[in-house]
Length: 291
Figure 1: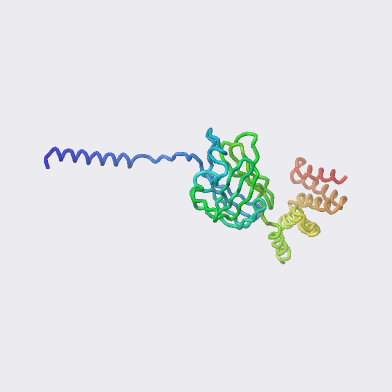
Figure 2 (figure 1 turned 90 degrees about the vertical axis):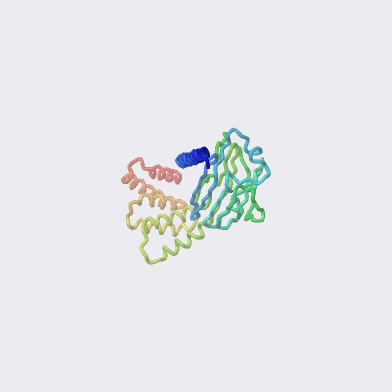
């Protein structure tokens, strides 16, 4: 091997080493995602819901009827298929869905959307969507927003003990889905079992049990007994419990008893929270409604 070749190989090898060193030292750069990932967690009643999806933006594009064609299955977001998990059975727009993890697909339309709950949660987009894996399909009626929503969002609103509204919102479109869970049947048996046990119950437990029965139109006689049991220990929350007692008595038609309980509630609320206590106003409103 002549000297020219040796010098060339040495220079070439040195260049490779230098280039490798430069590449190895290049800092890592994290670029923002075009459609950021989002995880939504919500408890409704005793049911835990988790939705994992990506949130694309409008970015000066026509979305529905354009980027997202009408009449075709959509991943309901970006990137991987939107994944939704229920810890208990639920109802979506009156359709029964067992507990589990699913893909949430949709078929957008100008006047009507099809919502699809599908077993194929572990897939990219909707490219491998298989209708045979559908757990349920049902319809939803979209409404038009007053102003555009730049970034796609899935949200829960109007949350109650046994229901909520699940909204799909993007561009000028809002698609509402009625969400329901079964709660009273499960909780009543637990409450009754706890009440029947010989263990001492806290005033807070009596208050929560009575409140649940009152709010769900259950046995008001039991609810009143539990409020009175909780009040026997003269708890710190006596003014809250007395307000509930006033509501129960009013619903039972005992106006005098309700007014007396409401006045006592206000008296204790002022002592505890001051004259600005919201319970004073709520009691005044209750008393006015009974006169």
